[in-house]
Amino acid sequence: MPDLAEPLARLVDEFRRLPGVGAKSAQRIAFYVLRASMDDAQRLAQAILDVKEKLGLCRICNNISDSELCPYCTNPSRDQHVICVVEEAPNIIPIEVTRSFDGLYHVLHGSISPLRGIGPEQLRIKSLLERLSDGVVTEIILATNPTVEGEATAAYLARLLKPLGIKVMRIAMGIPVGSDLEYADEVSMSKSMENRREM
Amino acid sequence: MPDLAEPLARLVDEFRRLPGVGAKSAQRIAFYVLRASMDDAQRLAQAILDVKEKLGLCRICNNISDSELCPYCTNPSRDQHVICVVEEAPNIIPIEVTRSFDGLYHVLHGSISPLRGIGPEQLRIKSLLERLSDGVVTEIILATNPTVEGEATAAYLARLLKPLGIKVMRIAMGIPVGSDLEYADEVSMSKSMENRREM
Image (cartoon, rainbow over all chains, first blue to last red; front, side, top):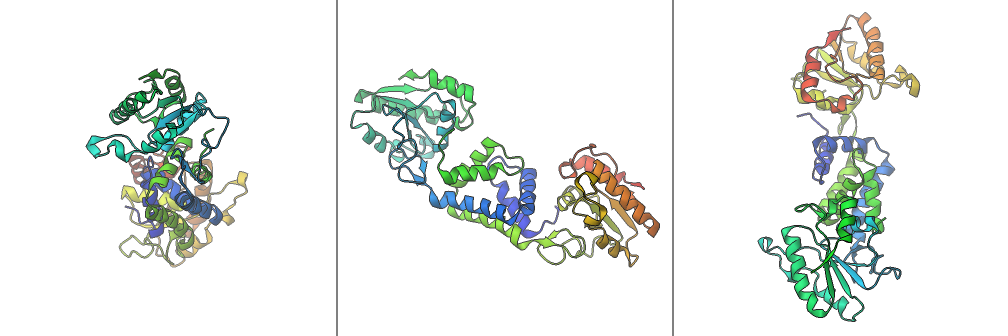
C-alpha cells in the first residue's frame, strides 16, 4: 500500500470510520482537508467537538437540544394536543420535511428488543406518561420504525396508552418494511403520515 | 426545514462542504459523531488539525510528508534511475496501488493552464531539473492527468527534458480521457504504466 505520511494516513482512517464513507472517499476528503485553509480545518474540528460538548437532551421530549428545551417544545404555534413518538432524534427530520405534522414530539431513544436485552424500562416512556397527566394531549402518533423492534414498541405503547382514553395512531406502512425511517423519501414519508391508522 | 440544534446544524453544514458528501450523508455523519464517544470525536478533530499542523513537503520530491524527506525518497530499495512526475500528491496513490512502478516521484503541485493563468514557472519544475544534474536519473515518466492541462504540461516537460539526453516517457492513455488520475481504477492504471511511450 502507498506510504502516506502518518497524520494523513490517520485522518483517512478516521474518515473511513464514518458511516457511508469508503476508502476512496476518505482519501479524497483527507486530501481536501489538507489543502483547505487552517481556518476551515479548525472550524470543522471545532464543530465536531461542539456537538459533543454543547448538546444535551430537551427536558420535555428528549430531543437533542443546545438548551433546556428544544425548539418544538417552546414553539406555542405547534399543536399541543398531538405528540408524535419516534425512536431516535434524527427520525424527526424526515417528518418535519413533509410539513404534514405540526404537533409535538417525544424521543424514546431506542426500541424494545428482547434480542439485545432492551425492554420498555430502558426507553423514555415514563416521561411520556408524565406529559399526558394534565389531559391536554388527546392523540399520540406512533412513528417508530417499520421493523420488528419498532412494531413491538408501537404495540407495547398502544396497550399502555389506550386505557388512558387517548387516541393512539400508527403511521401507515407506506414506507418500505425493514428499512430505517432516517432514510425515507419525502413522498413515502408524507403518505405515511396521512394514512396513520388507529390502533 | 427541521429545527436542528445550532451546533448540530453547523456540523452538518461543515460536512456538506467536504467533497462527495451530500445533504443526507452529512446529516447521517453528524448524528454519528453526536452519538460517538467523546474520545472518538476528539481523535477525529485532532486528526484534522494534525494534517494541517504536522505536514509539509518533502525537500526533494515535494510529496506531502511529516518529515524533511518522504518515504519514497529515503527508501534505498527503490529504483533511483527513474522519476515519475505527477501533478498532485494524491496521484501517487493509484500508481503505488498497481505495484508496477518502483522508482521515485516528483510532484509538480499543479499543471500548466493558460486559462487559469498558471504557467511553468508556478510549478515545481526547477527542483526537478536540479534532481537530474548528477546524471543518476536516466528516465522520466510523465504521469500528469489525461486532460488538456496535463497534456500541455507533459508536452512542455518533454521539450525541456529530451535535450538533456534523458528518456522521456508518457503513461499510456488507457485511463479514460478527461477524467482525473486520482479516481483511476487499478487495471487501467496498471495498463497505463505498462504502455508508456517515448515522447
